[in-house]
Length: 419
Ligand SMILES: *Cc1c(COP(=O)(O)O)cnc(C)c1O
Image (cartoon, rainbow, N blue to C red; front, side, top):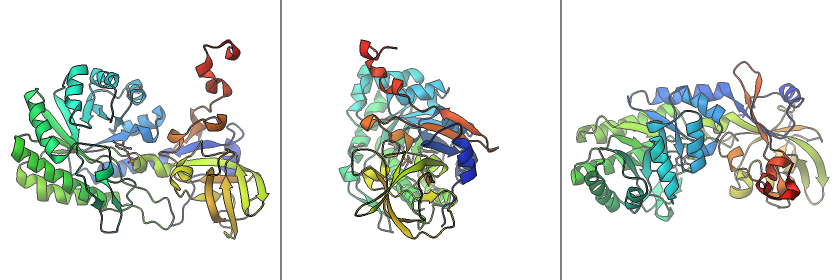
């Protein structure tokens, strides 16, 4: 499928009069359409709720848009909890799915009334000692082994640091019941960025079956099952996007086959999607500032891996459109690079693109999740602004760009950097 930018060259030229490149920009219209579809796809389940994975895009303006559709927040750190609190998302609208959790985070999560999703058996005692056991609790399951789908995509839960074993869940539920827990939930995250409609239904089957087993073993009927994140997006134009309606239907089929006959027909389905919610509706816009001809052809940009680290760290593919040259032939081979003193700082390697001239604008697709949020300050690079293209086409700044003052803020105790 051809990847279409949600901005034209003319729009970008207009935006850069106010906001210089590089910047991340989000498409409000796309975000709203997608969250509506997700809700519709799971409308067969009256208790359905999406807890947006804050780590994907921790921006209060975007979280507020999702919250209009009933989305809560999935948090896993102190500042993510603070962000959720600041936008008014509290209580059971927060899922606290953390691991290796510090005591003060459990304390704060309890204070906000968040649903705590315990990552480990030993956290039962830890939580009891630092913050007390709440009436509602969820436990994260790790089935071990390998998790494989028919298209060959697999992941390796047996190597993953997360979750309880099946035995630990059974013991854990008994202990938690004794300690006064009244409402139980289950959670698992077994594969990331799955571009197949099969993942959620397969995961649901694993979770629904363990829920039935736990009911038999402990008498506990779980009230919610959290399918977590992991629904992927087609970063590459050759990939077939997921169909959220097919995914919803697939989960519904397993629900009726496994949960309903076991007397668990009231279970609410929760999700903690990040990438699927915002990934396709964000882009990084950068300007070509240099052309370099040595053993290869290079385009040097004003953005770098500090703005988008996925290509440098995972070798991830992000599609690039040269704005204004959407229909030009891709007959030039480039490495598209940033300015870090790190050779991995490349947005694309040996990528066929239209001929790029200095000052051309490059639109890097699908940066709406795990894009800005993974940014860092290496080489003293500053984080960019985040902009929102609103439904009426107007642009709103939803995070300003960092300035050197922000970079030096942690030396504010030191006279060299005062004022
Ligand atoms: C990262 C994460 C998510 C979101 O994952 P996506 O791949 O963005 O959907 C959800 N839940 C937990 C616990 C996570 O760590």
